[in-house]
Image 1 (cartoon, rainbow, N blue to C red):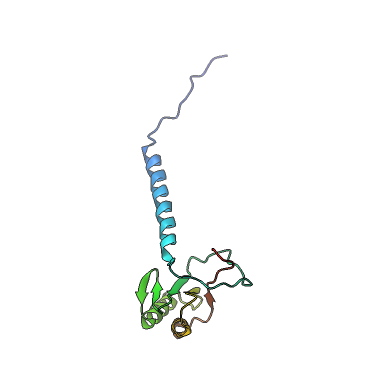
Image 2: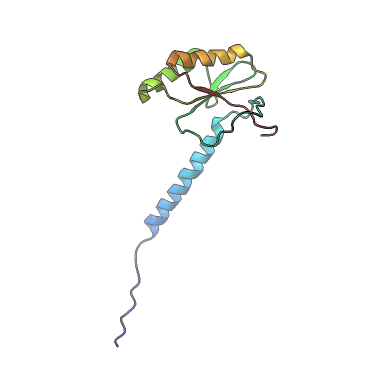
Length: 139
């Protein structure tokens, strides 16, 4: 029986390594962006009997209302009129009013500040709104 010479795969791995590094950079960047969307200064109220959220919708809009009544989206301050305009544009661009909106109100925020955000949602035709709260202390 005759021996066949062993064949080795030869090729340039530079392109594959480059793609792997780009993927790593992409995932690191997206993870760090998700962390900066929520304002950690917002102290959420407790709702021990509420249902815990297990899945996140990538389309959801988080609107923060701090204790002074300032409205923020992705840490940028907005007036309630600007929030209404933004939500109307989202509804128009997506073709439906099922944009998930989560209002993260500080436990010391006045209700009228949260009501302005709710009115902005209603003006955009969004009626399904969720309110963020903590299931237990320390979370």
